[in-house]
Image (cartoon, rainbow over all chains, first blue to last red; front, side, top):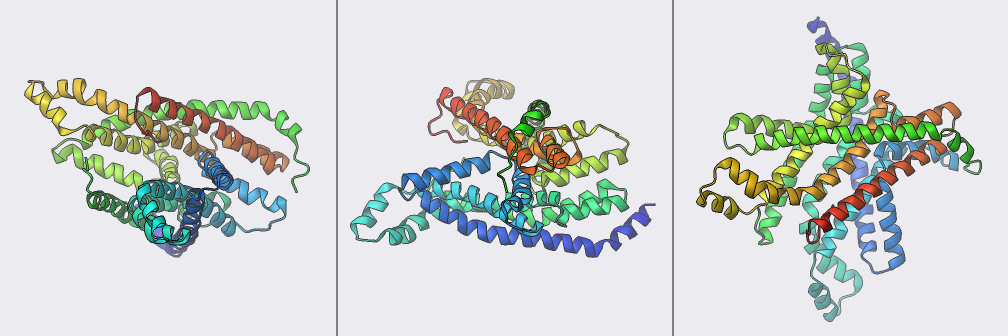
Length: 224
Length: 223
């Protein structure tokens, strides 16, 4: 019985590889796009224009206040009604990128605000332009605060990518769901699915912890 | 296009949404209580010096944090019947949320306890207090204060995570939206309405977190 199930599982190997590939693709694309967009939003939000920063703040709050599953449904079912045709993959990328960008925006804002005003004033006194101040003075120092939670955010992103299986994308979680219909051993199947995520996420969690310790030490703070 | 957005249908389905909202609230509350229980036990185990309790607790916390809630939910949903536990979906859902959030709660509590300067524990030792007295009278009252805002943050995450239970057909808020979307082919009405309800819950909890930070006198408390 167990032997048959194992054979059947081995038979599902190509499907599992496809699912893992889909999960990695989704996460990677939205990770890159989300990081770029998130940094852009974060810089804009601290830029001083009140209208822009309120608009971004409101949007971030709306995204943080609703479940990701609902956001995916909204994008996948409502954008077509507005005349934007999109497939499940694009909808997944849009939803994940948007989610990542909003959380990264918050992280970046916290990082930028942690840089002492004296630094900005000194840069101002040295005649640096706005862009130079941001790129050469503020952001390098903000990175110390930004980096550990940023890596933590990537872990969340990979885990959240499992939710796109709800709109029919064949990612790792969906593969588990499909396989469990044929091989009636939920414990084994979803243990393996979990293992797949664990192998990707755990090193990142370790990295985040290490960065946190290192950045804290570099900053001369007492780590408790 | 959204020009025929039908408020009438939303009003017609309002009782369904109301029931969904109530279910979401009480199942989240119950799961949060469960998560607190799991978290307290796990953090106590994790803080032990001996490996016998510490290692399993850490392994559990890491395993939960490195895998998606949806996979954990399916693990229980498809796995428990195999072990002979035939439970209703709602119970499986509450169990999954409690076990998942419990790991995060454990980390919050542990961080809170570790944030109390070592000198306080040492002063307790010097005053001749036992371990239990030190914990109960010195460490925990102070740690309690620090953990409240992040715990409320976790409660917000839990409410949002509870939306995933709709995927194992628990009749909560998101499920209500799905029903309207599929019965009447009105996804906009269904999902925008539930998003509004979730936002309401979010702002309530967020306000509570901000208030608690002020009550507890935490400078610069962030959630």
